[in-house]
Image (cartoon, rainbow, N blue to C red):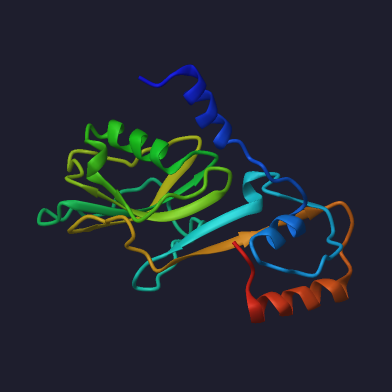
Length: 198
């Protein structure tokens, strides 16, 4: 059995031992960037400041805009199809919480609702989901204050994790003052050429 002293020593090993600004920390791991004076700003001040739209393997974008009716089932039930495919647009709720609510509403196990990946909860996000064995007796789709469903179509199979091409991000940074336009243009050109550290 581990002694108190051994446990304390183990906990001590996990304590962070470095401090400093981003530039200093990056230098410690071999990344040397020239220091720059950036404009102070807020990222994700509000959910609508961070938008994530999923891009499917077929390059189709699951957009956040409801171009057409929401929470509506397809006009014709297809007796041969067992899976309902649709877009989940949510704001301020984790993906798994929305999936749990949808599954519970239709009396299905959570595993019956397939999705390609998790999307941020402090954001407005849109992603394709697939509900296997969706009850044909249902007359409408789940309505919830934090999400809506759209573009429902009957099909087959189940969406699996990782089955997406990419995510499209739209990010609004709220600044204290307007940034210098030349500096901003130069920085954007630099990012386009060289990318940025993650």
